[in-house]
Image (cartoon, rainbow, N blue to C red; front, side):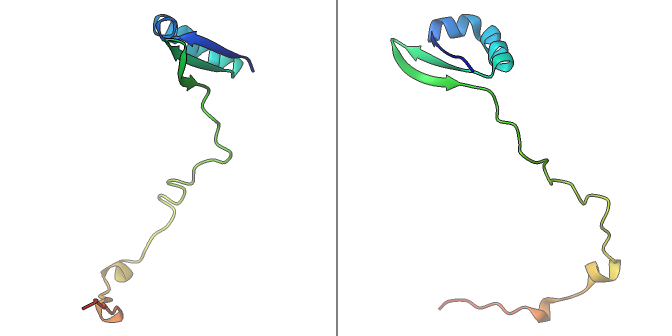
Length: 81
């Protein structure tokens, strides 16, 4: 995984090509301004496991009786005074 250092001017002029390079090689690019490092651009890390968002969507059903039940008498609210 190669690492490159480019000036902000060069990065601005070649941004899309440099991003393609990162995508293919997996390396990083350090962008400098007046010789000082300002940013590091690198590939996105791949997820280790798939997202669980929406996993149960459309698979779980709650009985209408359960959703309409009044459970307010089961809860106590305490407040500090």
